[in-house]
Image 1 (cartoon, rainbow, N blue to C red):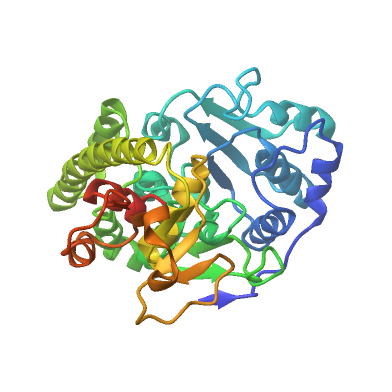
Image 2: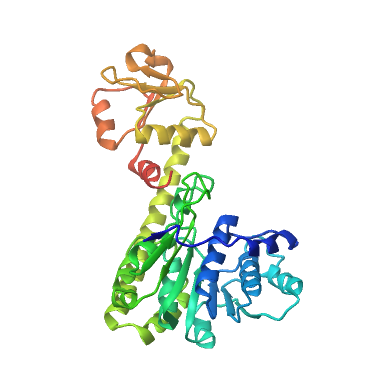
Length: 384
C-alpha cells in the first residue's frame, strides 16, 4: 500500500472560489489528492459516478484544463435533480465552470438513469474512475463491478469517504461501501495521511487495476454477501444482473443473485423487528407517563442506551441504580446502590438482557419494577 506517494495538486481548487456555490462533496485536501492523481497518471478517459451539484466535476475540468490534457470526462448520476435542493439540476455548477474556463472541454453528462445504461455509450479504455455515490452497501461495489470490464489495466479507481463511518460529525456507521471495496479488491492501493480530520487520514483512497484485480474479482462479489443498508429497486437489480451476465461467469452472477436474495430477506426481517421494537418503546413510554423518580436499573450497554433513548422522548430519568455488589462506574450521571434508594417512591426500568431481568424479578416485585421486552432490547442493540 502506497502512502504519501502522491503529490497534492491544489491549484485547480481555485475554481471553487469563483463558482456561485461552493457545493462540493469533497474537502480541499481530498480534491488536492484527486488532482494529484490526475496530474501523475494523466488519464485520457475519466468517468465520474456520482455528481451531486457538480463541484468535484468542476475541479476535475479545471485540473485537466490547467494540465492541458486532452481528456474525455463522463459524469453519471441516477438523479436528474440535485439531491440537496430539488429546485436545481444535478451538476448545475458544471456549466458555470465551463463558462468560466472559456474553452471547450470534452465533457458529457448522463443523468436520470443507472450506470449500466450508459457504459456502452461511454465505451472501453476508461483509465480513471471516480466512485462517489451511496457510500452504503451495495452502492459502490455494484458500480465498480459494472465498470471493471471497461477499465484498462493500470486504470486508477478513486473512492470517496473511505472512513465516513468513523467521522462523528456524520455518524453514519453504515457508510462502509467504499472501505469494503478498497479492502476486498486486489490491486495497488493508495492512501494519504494529511490533516483532513481528527485521524490525520484523507478520506479519499484509490487503487490501480491490475491483472490480479480481474483474477481475484470473486473477492468483491463475495463482499456483496455482507448486510446491505438498502435494496435497489427491481429495475436496478435487473439492469446490473443483465450487465454482469455479459462479462462475468455464471458462478459470479449466482453469487450476486444469492446476495440479493439474502439481503431482501434480512432487510425485511430488520424492518419487522424495528417496527415491533418501536411499538415496544411507545408502550414503555406510556407506562412511564405518570411516573416520578424513574431510575434505570443497570448502567451497562442496555442501561445507558435505554437512558438516552427515554430521555430523547422527554422521559425524565433521575439516574442509574446498581446492585450492592457492583462497583460504581465513573460516569457523569447519578448512580446509586439499590439499598440506598427508597424503592417504594421510585420506578425502576430494567436496563439489561431478558435473562438478567428474570433473575432480578425472581421474588415478587411491585409495579414499580418495569421489564423491558426483547423487541425493545433489539432496537437498543442494533439501532441506537
